[in-house]
Length: 215
Image (cartoon, rainbow, N blue to C red):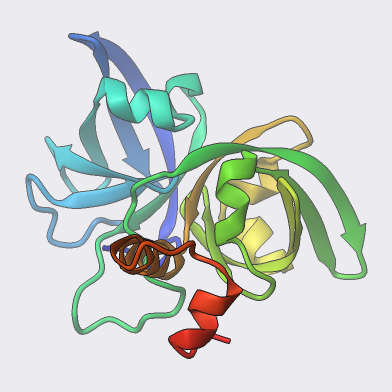
């Protein structure tokens, strides 16, 4: 489990095929204190298992499933990466609960300066936009962010200068693809309510939600 608070940047130093997947060698710009073989590290928001890990580098295997569901297969040697190590129970939860399991790939459709902020517009496959709510949470390339506004197949984010500086968002431009992980809470609620409505033989509609106190 992660929080979406990026610890620092990494750089992809090597890529080699392994079976139908890939093996990455990643160097970090910060020390990995007490590195442990097999620990989970989020790379651009994707939870991966670190091997051959030391203070400033680690290796990960990227499965075919992960390559098909994320942007990791589009990376090249030299690319910058957002890095976050797994949450410890004693840590502050500064962002939101992030699993590192990417739901879909989105695309940056707009970027413009607004005073000291930068406004990003991001497209998302329409079957996923129901999990986005105004002022709710979303993880973009592993970064915990607040949804500024949302519409059919699209949402916007207001990014502060600090986030642009310490993450790869500062490098993102219109047309770039990004990993998106939607808030876990909404997905669990939807499944629980849908299962309940199916058991009663009813549609999941406003009347059903009102009956159980959601409206």
